[in-house]
Length: 371
Image (cartoon, rainbow, N blue to C red; front, side, top):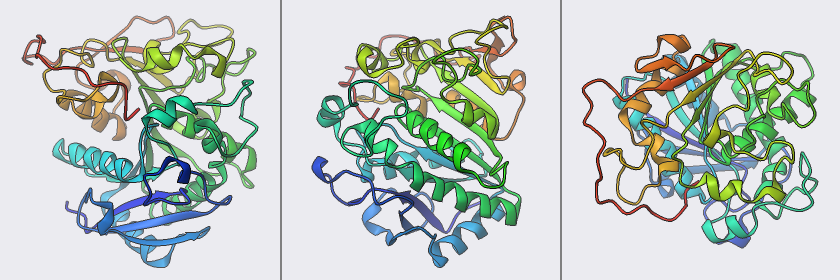
């Protein structure tokens, strides 16, 4: 079904600016709401802004609630670093259009936190010494994310209101550093909920996650389970990883900024362990190794797009996301096989039967970006 509006939400203090020095969070709990005409409109200049405010504007909330009720689902996209607000809008609308082309009927909207451009993202990745959560609330990428958690709580509160009034499913798709936003944001929700369970999210897709590979292990070992709140407050978490990722190896090299016990990146290696026992993978988490499909030779990846960002351009991956968002059992999604993990929660995405064989394309990989 077609939607009448497009939706973006951000806690950027200066959302229309592409100057890095103007990328910092709004005061705690506040958000800017953008309502656009037409389905998955990628042009943010055509949207109407409301806010900043700690309460969703009536026109925005009314339109979103009505279209969510008709669609049955809301899926929120959280981008990674090297995205200004216009880039975040384009990513959200692109994914919405791609999912729609794969017969996904849910409504896709975007949440944008204050990330920088590429040069400043790499220069101001995090503050030292390492701490979890960060101690500052603006400055570096991870400080800006820490300063966004109360605004994220406002977002989740709005989604809870819609879920309670309509019964729709609420999903999230997080890419790269957007997984760190989800990790800190849901941690804040878990610690500050007043009437547990505050919200029961449905499907959470962690795509090319720039977080540690023990983040979804049970928090019964030191430094493990930093993203436990995501699983605790949702129905299922699916981790999309590829050993052919061409950006996360750079991030993995910045070990001073990462969990000292588990410095490896979740989106590059997958979960730290599928072996039952101390450090178990959370029972709600599924590991999906996409290496055979999300790799540089895949002819579906457009020129200039990194393997790190390729998940959103490969029809087979989009179809997998569609089924996952719709709640299909992990072992019932097409083109997945069991990884024979001891706990049964590991899967491998296989190249689609009849798909064009992977071969060199002559494509030149872009520098790491849009992470």
